[in-house]
Length: 256
Image (tube, rainbow, N blue to C red; front, side):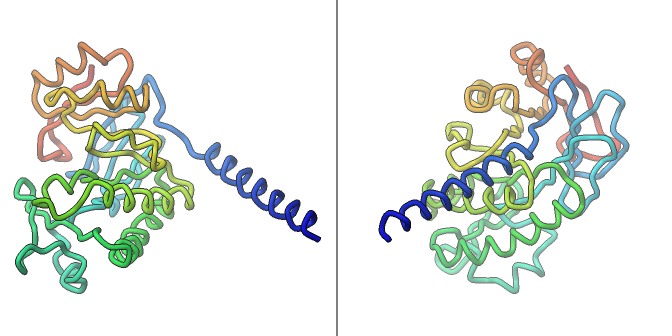
């Protein structure tokens, strides 16, 4: 009986591993040798050279492109105040006041406890499912490094745990997942498939992402000199786009 039970356990484990392998094989990576357009400020018809498009989760994918769904996974969006008023305990607070990313006016989500991470994962999970239903190929979770703006309240290990939950949810519905921010961290350890980097040329971070993900790194620069620097170093390997900071639908675009 013991032997038969052990064989059964091995069979179940092998089946699980096999299913996980099939799921991973079904997920795609960003295509190479095509350009990127980053359209979070408004959707527009991509140029003919563009094969990768990133849009907000409430937008529709671009026809004929490999599409990334933008989700702010670790901070609030400024236009979603009504939603987060319903979940005040999920907002990080210091002395009773929300902790805010002053650069963008976004409140940090409180991911410090397992219960809060589960509650937040249910909310963000609905957004992930929506990305899959709309037909996106991948999702990026912004502000993985929000712990660095938490005034010491959130630990990096808590960000990793929440990231793993979101990545698992996205993989479950067939989406590839992009690491956004925190170049020092090898996101493959929690399941990320590729990287999306804003201004890695400006902050000398492109090489770190390349070490983790090879050619599966997408770069957005906002200053011409940073764009030229990134192009000189990585333009033959990576998709790099120069955009206006507002990411306006009719805004500036240039490619290496």
